Length: 177
Image 1 (tube, rainbow, N blue to C red):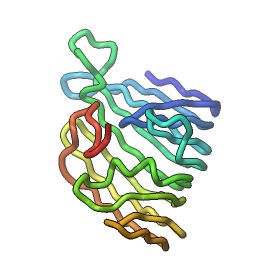
Image 2 (cartoon, one colour; image 1 turned 120 degrees about the vertical axis):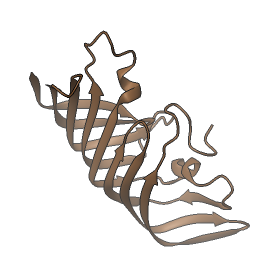
Image 3 (tube, helix red, strand yellow; image 1 turned 90 degrees about the vertical axis):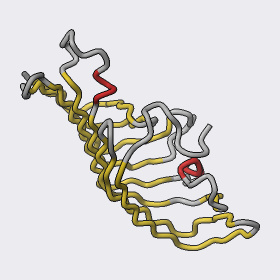
């Protein structure tokens, strides 16, 4: 069984973030070994992204495909389908209008904080209940950082390779309140 939703305003929450904008979606029930699964596919062609604790989005002009795979939500044997969800994101392009809300993702012991700046973001991320993997590229021009007691400004390029375990869902990144 499947359901196609034509292009229209959409909103999807994942990993402590919410994407809102125009795009299309589909839901498909798949038969699997032992139990069925539901696959939600969302393709945003113009969206905004914000952390759930932000009043205003810090990411604009987002073009992204997301797939969320959960155990059959209609099965009585599945206690919490979200706990077993798998997420796959393909970020084709995004403009981070303010990098400072992402300070909580920096290591708590690092003497670095982002003061201001914009960036572009592209990459892929796959998250399962037990692991995360992905490649993200962040490029910023004229970003301001505080490093120890110094303030620096300049261009920044981060090639982020993500591999390994993930924090339990609902737990904030290091240093986040």
